[in-house]
Image 1: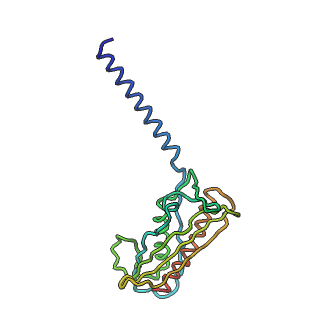
Image 2 (image 1 turned 30 degrees about the vertical axis):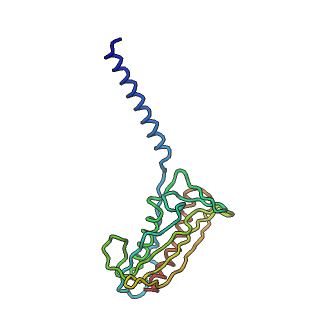
Length: 204
């Protein structure tokens, strides 16, 4: 066998090995990709009654612990110990999903001149700062969706805190599947968003 033939055979072998490695890598990626992506629904018309207020509110991206600050859907046991649904995920980072839900809830009230996120170009009067303390399926005892959000409303003109409070809701899930967990968390989030929107409107 000539040197040229040997070199060609070696190149073919390396190409086959590389393609095989790529196929295995793609297979692994496919097996870990979520089968379903979930969002959070905003209440349709919370606190819609009353005069419209001539103010604009900026909703900052919520802060959260690293265990919650991802697209993973959290399951919490006693401790708390965090695990995650392997084949399900939020449609975006949880902070972005919650931020969008809060903005839409405030918009749905039709009580504010403007509501937006950083970069929307609003001349803001108030800034809503939040922290996600819980957003999970809790399986310690009866399985339930738990949502807890701490909120602080800041006057953007002078930087002073207008008020701060914590909102929490728990809703029984009826089971521990991803669908059941997300339904319970959606309901709990809807309650929290509704109370949060009413609180913001009462303070501006």
